Image (tube, rainbow over all chains, first blue to last red; front, side):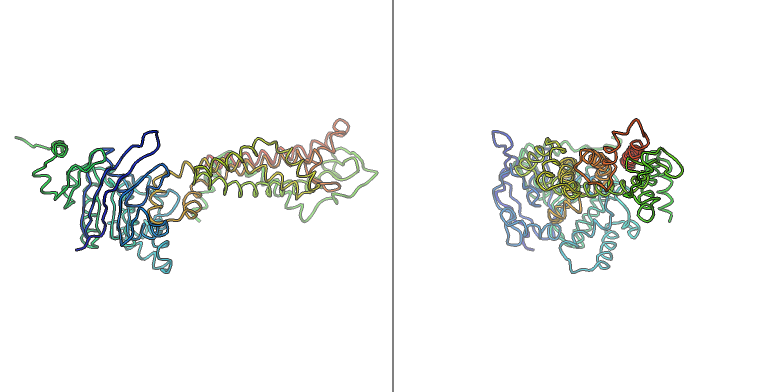
Length: 266
Length: 273
């Protein structure tokens, strides 16, 4: 299996104040085809920032980015916006933490799921788009897809909306799916379902997934490889099993120790 | 079917919407009827029937030239309404585009454009109208132009504020991630989210336009005799305020009703969501 995404020396600085503030320092990531990589760390560790940079969403003026994000022979940091846009949604997709606000409140679900097809593949006609959208909605576990297609976001629960987000992200069959804390806003049973769904997508479609979370137990269930970040730096990375059984960094040890354990009886 | 009966029920529950619909309905009916039939020719003078009060023959009396006030009100409200529609259309279209672009892009572009808008806002609209009229002459095109320009700033500010609010929403970020272009983002994703605010500000703008038209016509900038507009009639009527009160009261009441109807409609739409 080949390397699909190669991030080297990614460095992100904010220039909002007098002193530049480094939020990501020397971030490296080699993502292989069909792999699930977890990025863990506390709030402010730079994990979301790295992901947003990969997704090409960081383009504020007060921001300085250096390094390379190689995808398909293009450097996503320096390529022109049209190239970047042609990848976004079609080759690289992202889902967010807040399913309640990530869908446009005034548009129908079907319209939102179809949108990236409409943008990237204008040759596909309306009927075919609808067929694919309903198929995709069913694939993410929304069995009532024909009705949901015509609903507005407020008619769905948080878990259903996150499934819709995943459907919208997956409809173009992207090579990479970035999931930025996709389960944090959901309750535990729904969390497990979403993790299962991501696993299924990875297995059936071969999509590489970057899974960002502060929940180590979820990461251990889902990811083959983990990157641990603290204050913008990668403190440790490697196979999930190795990191959990034999962490070398003190911060990683603390994180693992912080996973709540449920002891039933003694 | 089911949907429309639900909407009808909702309208019946809201007194503002109901009152607004009834009042504007009456005004619109009067204007539409006036397109096909008026009791008298609005410009036809009659020396023997000057300054009559309310009677069966002239339900709003006659003016100082013996013209039927009701017919003139019918004609004048049409003119006033059309000018208000034109004004709001110019102001809302230009204001929305300016507000959406400045709100979405921000930065230096936003600063420069909004300072120009502020300057325009600070400039009295009546003065602007007088300048335009003194350069281009009097007439309804000039009136429409000056009022339309004067209405751009308020729309631009409202839309800019709303776009600023929406710009940082997650759904905008996620749409951006799907490769949505800026133009599509603004007009397809963001603007539909602020249509409620826009609808009510358009109706409030309507009110202001009716009043501004009346004010400018009163100053003699708007429509020219012998054609009527509500403001022009008021200014003609003021000398006869005490001798023939019906002459100035009738167009006055119609202006008030128009403004009231649109205000109620605007309030009703604002509370709809």
